Structure formats: C-alpha cells, structure tokens
Amino acid sequence: MASPSLRQLEYTVALADHLHFGDAAAAAHVTQPALSAQIRELERRLGVSLFERGARGTTLTPAGRDVVARARTVLGAVGELEMVAAAHQGAIRGSLRIAAIPTIAPYLLPAIIDGIQTAWPDAHVVIEELQSKDLVGSIESGDVDLGVLATPFDTGRLHVESLGDEPFRLAVPDDHPLAQGDSTVPLDVLSGLHVLLLPEGHCLRDHARDACEIAGRAEHSEVKAGSIATLARMVASGMGATLLPASAAPVETRAGSGISTRPFAPPAPGRGIALVWRPTDPRADLFAAVSPALRAEVEAMLEDT
Image 1 (cartoon, one colour):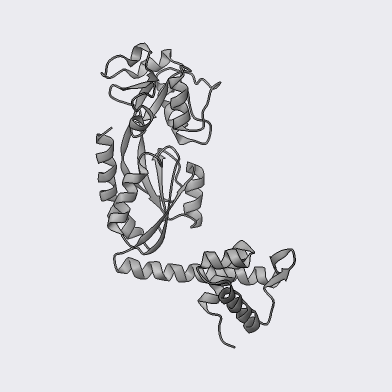
Image 2: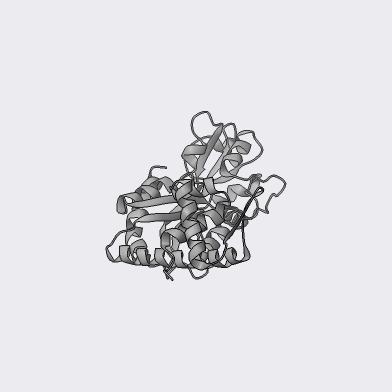
C-alpha cells in the first residue's frame, strides 16, 4: 500500500479544523473538488472513513480523530525539518508566530517587527496579543515562536533576551498641579494621588503596584481599567492618575488628550522589555543573533519618547 502524501494529510487536517469542505479548501488554498478527491483517496488507501458526511454537516469518525491526531504530529515534524534546514542557511522562511502582551503590542511591537522583517524578509509574520501567563504557555506548547513581554515575570524555562528598560511616566489631568512643568517628580508624589491600575492578569499592574508600594501608597482598587487607553481616558476625565510606560505616552497623551505626563526622578520606576523563546527551537541561534538589532530598535524608539 502506498504511503499517504503530505498533501493528503494537510487537506485532512484542514477539513478536521473547519468541518466544512468549502472553508477547508479556502484555508488550504485549493479548489474544493481537489481537496475532496485527495481526502477520498486517503480514505481508500487507509481502508477507513475519516469523515461522516451528512445533511447536518461533516464530522470526524473515531478513526478520523486518531488519523488526524497522527497527521498533526507528522506535519509538525516536517515543519521542524524545514526550520532546521532554514536555520542552517541562516534564514527563517514560512510562518513566524509572534505574541506580545497588550501593554506592549500597540507601542513597541512595530519597531520589533520592522527589525524582524529586515533580518528575515522571507518570514511570514503572524501577530497575536496575549497576556503574559498565556504568552509563556503558548510558547512552551509550540503554538507561538517568539514572545515580547515585560519583566520581571516568571518565564519558566524559556530563554529570555533583554531588549531594554522602559521607564514609567506619571500621567495626570491637564488641570492637575503636577501637570505644570516638565522637570522630574519624586516617586513619593504617588502617596498623595489616587492611582488607577489595570486589573489582575496584566503584569503592568504588578509593576505599577510595586512602584506605589515603594512610595508608601496602598493600592486603590475601586477603579480599574482593561487597557492603557482606557486608563488614559479615566485620567483625562479626572478620575485619578496613573503610571504610563514611556512608549505609550506619545500615543495616549497626544495634543488634546487632556493628559500631561512627567518623568520620575532617578531611580525611576519602570519595566524591562524582553524577547523570549524555547531554547529547543531549531531557530534559537537565529533568534539570539537578531536580538541586538531588535534591542537597538527598541532603545531608539524609547529615546524618542
């Protein structure tokens, strides 16, 4: 019996993912008749039905579930072979899945992506936003290749490469006394402010809370926002003050925003920016090699804030 082809396995997995022949064909970039013919040929070769086709739609048979699970393993192994070969050529081709936390993605990720696309123009970059814990888990499981997050954070066994340190800035309404002037302010000014924080799950909350505790400020928990943009709007409406990452300040405090920012006097509170990946990834050496260029991109962007 002839062995199943990779194409047949790819089409079978696509149909298992979508359970709709038209959608599976579109995802596989093939016509529906071609996809159907390859799957039927695979069923003929294996001597079992992989899908139940009925008026209510398409479902996997018990045999189909087992075959699809093994097909995913085979396709994953083939993908790793391609990554190993490309790594020996000093290049990354195909899909490169990158995740960033929500408090970094809108502000610093564009500079990082520019550096990656310059280094590996043949890579197809796929971007996803994940909170830190989910990001680490997705890289460990192989669902994501590279992650950009804020430190300190428990990254488990992942390799961590620093891309720089980002200071926080104090954000207050335009009519607040601290909005006047552009000199630095001491950290202990936080002890007299109502500080707005992100909810649990965002590492920016932990980093900002640490700064508040250093300043002798107990956390105010009655008002919490789900994003930096929402925090900024709350500050503009006079609900309190917050700590903005330097990269977010130009975006969230643009002219007419109703918000002013002040830098903190040294030692200023802040966070680290890091690139993380699996040490066992065949492209780990390439990730390490491009890290200095990405660090330069991030540092240049932060200097402009």
